Image (cartoon, rainbow, N blue to C red; front, side):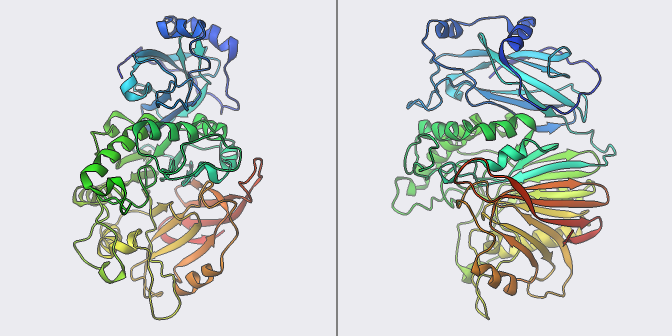
Length: 530
């Protein structure tokens, strides 16, 4: 994708956006911009009836905010579930224009330009803005031909090191489309947030068509680039998900289901499947990564190179928060049982990522340091008594490296480390102990685990086995299995985590409530009930 821009200018900040705008008035206003007046051949095709619906069927999004800009994303797809995976687009490049303004009526446009979307990239656009004011709200929109996208809101990060008295964000994971309606996102879109962090399983590669009137999807496992594109488009077509993307910038990482269940580096876990050969699996991974990038508001630095992509990175928000977005899939050793989990050669981060993380958290950091990642970090023994049973897919399966990361955070004096986790379709609050087998050992960090958006269906408060977990793992303070997300309000003195849940996803319209609230005090690792 190529892009051209005009420079932004300064003006007063705007109030929080309440609704998405579009329609004829927006088209008229957009036409006033010289960057938005061209009508390509594709648009004339649409006038002739060859393209039957809006090219912005998948919505718009922004992501990875820096102090002077963000990434703007859209993908042109008038027929998002077309069987060839091309979204109903022609086999040629199509320009898309964009605008950024300080007001949602676009009277104060501060940047405008155009991007060329290409068929080999799914006609996706990734516009990397710069030159904006730090810590400021902006509104943006796209135009393809005569079609105007919804208006969306985004926000730049405060300047690095600038004093920041409050930062609000939510984190979420695990949104299985056939498992239920994305009720949680309808409520998330109404929050007052600076960021959404998504911690993995944005799609499920193996889900069958659901029974909830949720549209159509390839049934069973997906393999081809077209399959992955259609699966992403199916999820992206959800209007509640679109609303949450349109309200806030997101920071995303993948887990396993964006490619294949429980994959590890170049190792497929599909015994007997066509991709059991590592080289065949690498080709599948390349297709999955390409489709993932085509549907996410990611920077060019996160653009895949075949089967490889650097998804780990750092985002900084003033002097208050550093986010270290990790990758616990692409470089990990294969999963093993309990007997081999203490092998010091085993890695979940890989040597290069681990070195990057060690240096980053040992240097100058913000007051709160967040490891935003995928799988359970704290020890979790599932059976009562002297025996043990740990998850071999979580950090428990990589015992030495987990302890090394934990101990390094303490030795380096990393300020207020907090681990954010998804994956397990349940909410947890954990003390990260210096010795998980000694409840009296020092608490070195805090882990907050968020439940799923829909994976696992309607959910429940707890299961019988949760009582065993709480007994065997006294560092685990809380377990809940409703669906939802975690809202976090962070100040220099404390971090407040609200576990926001809905009671059902089997039908739309569920109300939301706070199931629990925990507080972490500055300089005091471990969360306490509010």
